[in-house]
Length: 504
Image (tube, rainbow, N blue to C red; front, side, top):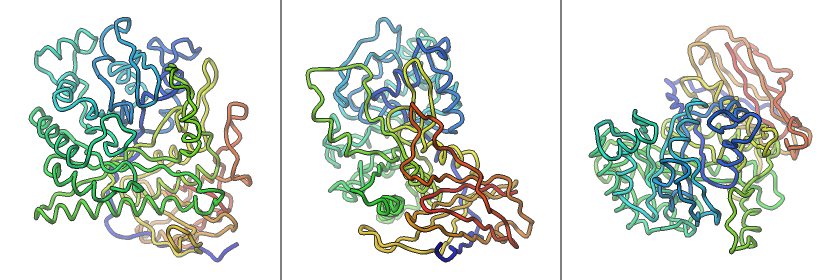
């Protein structure tokens, strides 16, 4: 066991947590929609064809706002295809994922599913193959209350009341060569600005998200953000960040440093946005919508993507169905800690994705639904996180990262509300156990603290996973030895672990 990790909770006023940080992402991709959330022939299906076992798991996961319908899919999507009588909806080729889209599920059906799971809708508009006019048509169809051709069509399609969508994404990953309709920063910035200005003529209080770089590793990262914001700064509220992580070779320790990359990503985007503000002598602050993040084994996808038959356009094939390990779940928990630490600027985030496609929930057609390992840190953090975020300065053992230099083995954050304190801790070491000692006395305001919940996500086999054959192999267990000593929370943590503790 290494020497104890020592931390003190920030005693400042804290950061007000926007619950949209616990958002999700649903794209028309693979088996996410069809055979995932929607399977009319399933024993658990409701009258609308939605799997109620999946609904229950999404509610347990605790996602607040869900981004839809993409993702790469949206850059070729005609939203009109997904409304009206189902038997009249066209089948289309989806160029993003080389599949056939049946359009059986569209805006109305997805909004009905959101009501079942208790989440809000965040809509993306197509700025790949389409533009401002089509975005305005969708906005009017979704949100208008007065009598127009679009609101009459909406009523004829079963919805008299507006959908009331407040948050809108202006395209998706428009700098990516893989994106249908990809554009330069200048061309996209001008289009996004025109579209944002027009949408605000309809409703100035909409919250608009402009596309940042699709990855921190893009060669244009930084320059893209600066150029796009030069055009859109006055017209948008958020800029997006997207990041996916996977092991680099066989170096598990390096993989466990992934949250450091997310931290640097956020800091760099914030710096650029604030420099653009300073150039305008503006006190406006552009917030971050980290609307795609997860562990994703992209190397596996890249290895098979080129071998797919190009003359076949299947419906809802099995794509991107990663099976997640305990190690993956610890990284996801650490990424959540990092998002919370930056809650002053990250006001929205979307775990990508939710079901089957790199998702915390898996399903089998006609069969069960189960929780992947990554389900647990998200569900626990969403449920236990309080109203105010408090950063924790931790001194711990370190390891040497080839990308980031010296990295602490322990990362932690706390939240505070009237009922108590929640603490979330990731232990990144692959070899040694540790004892974490966090001074909560000041944050507790002199009140005595009692541990009411203490959860540990760990397994002696860091590669353990939940599968169709063994869906309950991994689950959080009670954290043994947790205690409070004179206002100090003591957590004994094994290597490669994540913990959540609630104190009243």
